Length: 348
Image (tube, rainbow, N blue to C red):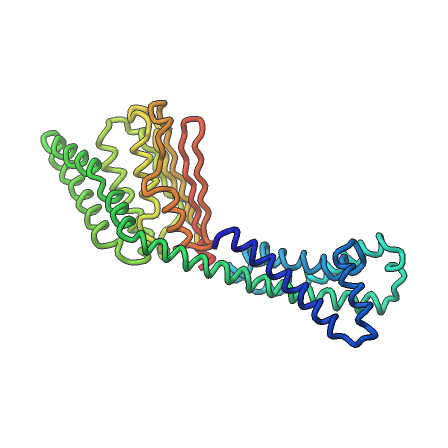
């Protein structure tokens, strides 16, 4: 959903809230109406009513809208959501009461029963605002997800072509076949092993990427085969620094998440005579996977973009497959390009 539409939605909510208060006051009995109209005017000024009834609602609404939704509701952490959802509104209300008693002397003279009643009313009203905030944020998130899916569907053919281009890079295949052909004359057994790796890569791309999620071990095997075929381009054993720590058994991920970054690392990496020109690391636990891919590059590629499928498309795919369950950070400085992707399994 566009930011302008979200802003209008928020403005509309508060205008509707003020309209309901005004309507309620205007239908009150005549004896209370004059005091009610004065109260409406107080809302627009700095007054005890503003501090005790309006401010807690504002704080509660946006506390629920931002913090509670993203940290608890979206991750389905319901105990924390209930705890903070019930305590925070009354804390906000209590702090606003303290502020009001400090600013307004008459307000400080309220009896204990009056203060308790005001605290209960203000806290309850804040809880209602917070609940509505969760509903609005949920609607915006749901609507945004639908629009992302529609946009991805519209670009389906474009995406598939981009995936094919990334997965079966003609340049990579040409080099791999050519290198294997040269290797046949030098070491037929080694050439046969690399040919099998190329066959495994083709089989993976044709058959294993059709499902929504695949075993992480298969994805890693594909990446390892890809890296081995890149190694035969150079005699420098330190050109590539690749490591996997942790046990991938039992974990499943969306296919082809990492290869765009890895492919671009080799595409733009500095001379293969340099050690650690490409660094690829996977750190796996039961709850998350940390993937880091970085490469140094020479000045000739300084103005080039490391896009692959396009960072925007990769981010949209992650948003669709892992909403609220991933972080992606891409940096490009000191002639080093680095992508760090974290996937959170505990949020499933």
